[in-house]
Amino acid sequence: MSIEAHVTGADRLARTMRAAGDDLHDLTDAHRAVGAEVVQVGRGLAPVRTGRLRSSITADAGPAGVTITAGAPYAAYVHARNPFLDDALARREAAAVATITEDVEDVLDTIQGA
Image 1 (spheres, rainbow, N blue to C red):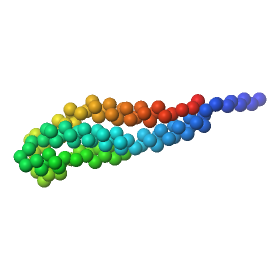
Image 2 (cartoon, rainbow, N blue to C red):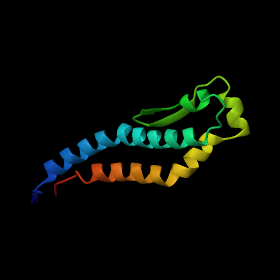
Image 3 (cartoon, one colour):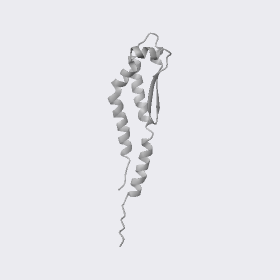
Image 4 (cartoon, rainbow, N blue to C red):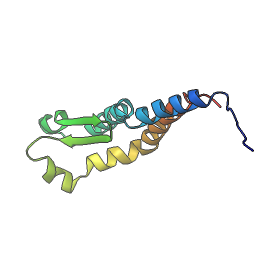
């Protein structure tokens, strides 16, 4: 005795799940958006004498995350006394989580089939 089952849409489900998995490995766009927001807030919070520190704040986004840095030579010293980048991230934390969550949900919404 043998039983055979056919699931309509199984191939489509497997294909769209595989594509979604690939898309979830690269959240660069969401990370770039988060980085831009944190940089903007950080520039507003950075202490200013000449503007060099403020203008040196950048974001480097990639598939796995975003790194916010201030490249002025004295940035670490200033940040140790006034953690303006930490404060910027804290102010944008909820928005950052929402941005990344929305991106993930958009990818998951592409899954179709069975």
